[in-house]
Image (tube, rainbow, N blue to C red):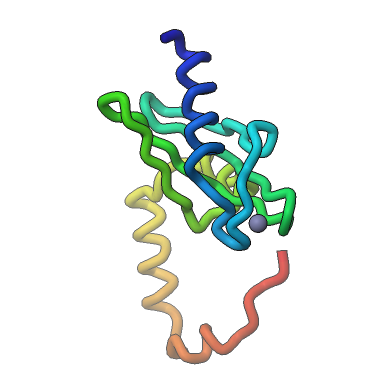
Length: 117
Ligand SMILES: [Zn+2]
């Protein structure tokens, strides 16, 4: 099986076995899009025609069997974070220094509304 045929087979498996996590609607082949792949793991964007939910699904192929799971990321978040470098030692030190200098407590931070994006 060539790589493209393998990807098509995985999409067909998702269509056959996976439903929208929000409303339970079935997906069609056109609702599933590959947005990334690393070896035997595919990142799939799935869009529900019924409730308009977009979700990120990871599908893994092992020993001829496909397993898939929903992530709690949206496809947009995946696109945004996938190219970011991993957290470095410098990042940890910077965070540590901010925390040492910070004189409030976490309840103040958590009670603030989250920033609008
Ligand atoms: Zn749905």
